[in-house]
Length: 549
Image (cartoon, rainbow, N blue to C red):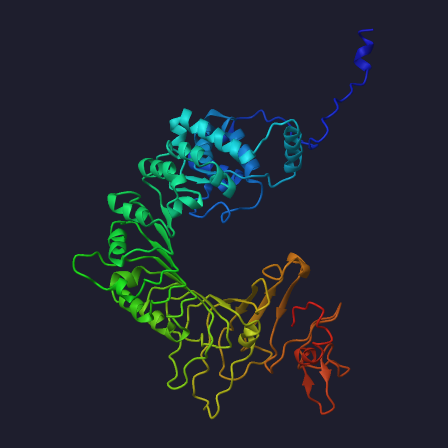
């Protein structure tokens, strides 16, 4: 009987219902030398960053703003398994595992269905279970028991409800993380709420390396406490609806040597005098980024005075202006002329009047600007030919890319020796949308090699516009599968759409039958392009989504 047992078929154990079935196929065992032993710590860290990408996230953005692809919880689990695989890997993997900690409320994978079912069973049994709260408690216990791991924590990002409901646990966690640089804090922390008093004391006493802080209405005493030496390594400050004297603000900013970015929002007291030089008061610091949101009393002349300082002028790289009525469109040329090192300018405004008539305004000219986001709710247009290094442009005009794709206009009475019309000389990324569009439509304008001074023809002399459906048009356009190239024909239209199994023909080149494929021949011998025909048929095709419209 014992001999016959060997021929019996062994039954596979039944897998538990609700657990995902996974088929792992492993290769044959490798019996050679260990090749990973020769990898240094830098290479291992780089490999582990691919295993768990969010552990290398060192941005100063909240948990809601710094999400990524994949399941962050599963990635962290895989990295923890790597730390336990070899002694050589432990120090590198553990250091990365506790560098940037992210706690999520759910799994962003199929495992969430399994865990959700398990949580429902526990809740029916009277055992309430909140995953992010439990993970925060486990993290608190770990870093308090092992201070070596607590010293490695630099970034801590939590869900909104967790940081609002677990203020005491969060305070106990940050108290043993002396190298913490950013942590998601509850909203009451930024408004001087008394419920965050213990958390505020722990953060001020134990975490001197905090890099970002907000000061909302009600936190006037908190910002004045920076004069006592708290948070001396702040890089980013956001000031919203704060009531503070400009003199105290200048003293606070002068006490932060590492400050590089400030955001002013809803601060009516902010005016040009904040940039004036006053004896005995530190000057307004030189910053890399300035943001103004709904600031009503700051003018372009005040910014010009600030940029008259060579240090401020050379350091400023980005400026964001949103809904500031005292900084109208007509004064943007003053800012661009003064900011000689500016790389990015974003301007968003709602205007009710057109540009002043009288003396024409100077064009927006800058040799350093790379990205311009110009978003106003009017039909005002500006020249961009005086921005030779511009690479990105945001406009609220859906027809703007088509106007750039047209051939340059012919100047009347221009001689043959006159220089050709000025245009851009590098690829330009245009993001456009209309008033009722929800997403930006991406268009890449590729310039020609050289202009001949006449209108573009089929052989060259005009830019090419490439539309990519997956960069702003949504899945209804086919995702990555559908891409189109729109080439102007030099006569106000575009090349015709080719039929199936047929080479594309120009709208200005009729075919052998006189029809030219999709071109349309008129009785007088002239040719109208596809765009001209589509313009009359637009109402009939208004319900269909088409890239050519």
